[in-house]
Structures are given as C-alpha cells and as structure tokens.
Length: 70
Image (cartoon, rainbow, N blue to C red):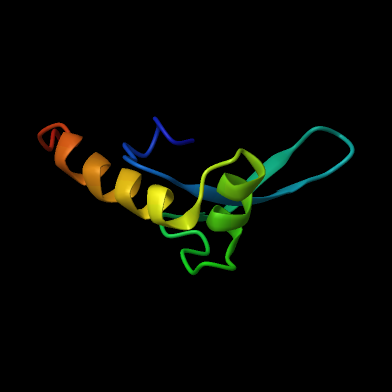
C-alpha cells in the first residue's frame, strides 16, 4: 500500500480483513499518532527509539523525498 500510493516517511494503514481473505483498505494515515503517547511513538519506543530521536528522524526524512512524479 505504501508504494502503491507513493507515500514517503511513515504511514499507518487501517484495514478490514475477513476470514475469506478479502482485505479492504479504510484509510492511509500519514501522521499516525504523532504525539509522545501516540501510536508511532509507542512503536518507536518498543524498538528503543526515544521521542526526540523519532521526531528528528522524521524531520530529516522530509528532505529525502524524491521529486513528484504523477
């Protein structure tokens, strides 16, 4: 999904999956819980990445985005 929509940085995809295997994308959220207690910070903390380091990495990644290609 990330590559399909041309996302850059971080993305949280919300979806529904049913037992038959059908998956429906509900939302592509490009700022998934950016607060210190939000989803992204919680996942980063589980990997040993503190909030200041997470924000610094996100800001640095903003300058690595390739040129827009329709």
